[in-house]
Image 1 (cartoon, rainbow, N blue to C red):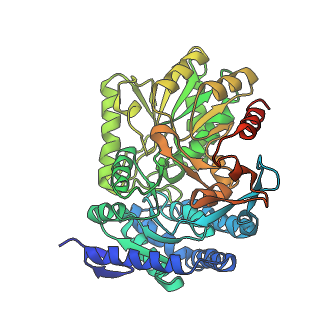
Image 2 (cartoon, helix red, strand yellow):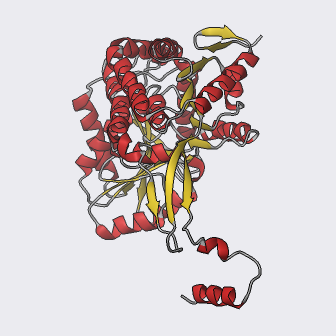
Image 3 (cartoon, one colour):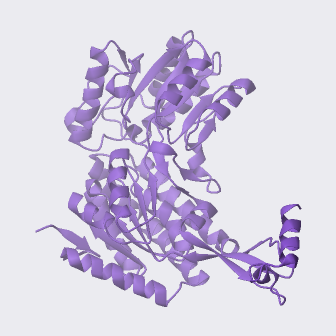
Length: 475
């Protein structure tokens, strides 16, 4: 018998469907007011503030060890900022928007209506911000939510689900815990929208399951986010900013830099500057309490395989320190993989760990060609001040986001969309864009007393009608 835990209680599979039906019925019967939505958003904030230490401890257990600063900055603060932004701007977002009508005396507005119940499947790597981030838009739009947290973050997921039950009714926010079968069951439910964050392969399965119910999806899938470092640019600054993010959460980030393209004359200096920065900031890694472990043995083994494959194909490995990895504890020293072949696994798969390919180039054209040969990434990064190069990057590449002279900072801006394109995702959320993503934009048309637009379609189609249509065509 499959093990499903709905709102912290073991249930049979059919109970999950029944509960979703009840949530939908409640959502249809009672539309959440703006004040009720703000109340839910604020309760989310209180939950996170009140239990931040317990949440940090629980997720650290799931990682083997996770640096508290990683959880506080990304998951706690990141979530609170998203929720606060929605609460502060909601009155403005819900206002109907006037539109222009071509018919005299008529009036048209667009109003944003809740969809109903939205499902959220969140991942293990940033388990809170990738739950509460989309949830901010879901609740702001007036929906109810059901959350399926990752089974790979078992301790944190268990605590989160218990806290949600304390702060919210089951009709406001519900949770489902369980393994792969629970995820399959969850994605097959007839939600009014489904949000998934995870791998591209799993995203395809989620989309296929959702299609059976014509459930629209938002998929945040990651990919290989490139970094281009312009020739002769500020290499120290570039190395520091790149490695800040590559070592944050041990590189287990969907928008972490996945490979760096550096001019061949600058490559040795770039690697040395990166190593120097890591030595200054960390010193050592294996027992450093500021450095996070790789999440589990499976991921650790996968990363080791990527290194072995790159080495066998002729790449040079440069470790940040001379320490030995402590693989049973998931403690891996950051490693630069110099000039791996494009056929190597490390250049074909999303890395999701503290390994960084560094590839030499001669001309920017080579960078553009490589980026465009691969699937469209969730983010792309450029370091340099050359306006012509920046223009080339902007006009000749397509990515979920583009950041100039930094890495990942765009996710801190809640007024811009967060999402992918192509294989890196479908749809985007954050701020007002998230509110609209999880709303139905319904046009409302008010006819004029004379009903001119209606008369235009009324038989018979006489000479007067023809003259009016001809006039409209030739305007």
